[in-house]
Image 1 (cartoon, one colour):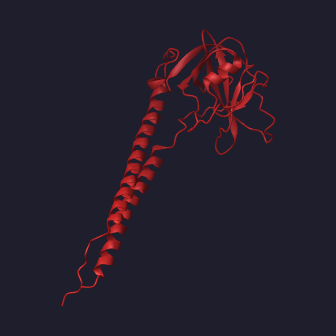
Image 2 (cartoon, rainbow, N blue to C red):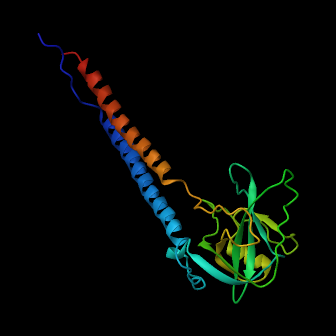
Image 3 (tube, rainbow, N blue to C red):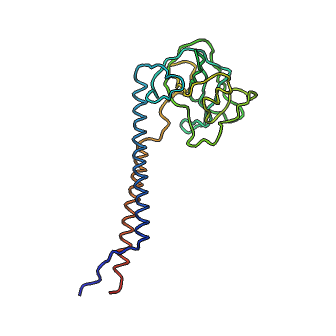
Amino acid sequence: MSGPRARFRPPWWATLGTLALSGLFVTLGLWQLDRGAQKRALFEAFDTGTATAAVALPPGGSPLGPLRYRRVILQGRFDAAHQVLLDARSHDGQAGYEVLTPLLGDGEAVLVNRGWIPAGADRDRLPAIAVDTAQRRISGYLDTLPRPALRAGPAAATSPLDPWPRRLLFPTAAEIGAATGYPVRDFQVLLAAGEPDGYLRDWRPELMAPQQHLGYAVQWFALAVALVVIYAALNLRSRSTDPP
């Protein structure tokens, strides 16, 4: 006499829930794969752009687009009186700042990132960031200004009475321009390592590595598979014990 046969008749709500959740997990996995591909393209653009010939600055108001990480050569003089310390910029686990110094030339000023400098034990004492204001010619790499994932309001108050240098977290070019009194281009130039008057310049895209996105994608796909397996196993087991 044969034993009870397994029957697979799950309730509709279990099927609907499994389809919805597994679909969500697969969608998140595909999104992570896409993000990894985007990050891989940015790292490749950085390696290519920093190794190629210098380009001209983009026209005013234009996005960087394919010019991001390309090398540029600028002429002007640093405005030592209006510098910004980008706050919460760490290096090898140590807290510090990146120094943004406007370079004054013809037309709008360009924000030059002179590199990373450590913060002192006393947050009320800012590091000395003096710079020579003589006319000079510099080279660096075009990049966007750091931006938060979600901006809730202005970076900080920019009253004319606030002292310089100003410690800001995610300032915009418009906010810096309003504080300095002259127009500022909406990007930064990462000062090349061989240029004088710079600090630590270990320039790399500040992005999650593509391999991490791949790892997250695998986790989402694994959750989708595990959910389907659990759904099938629970419903087969429950139906196999039904009375004849």
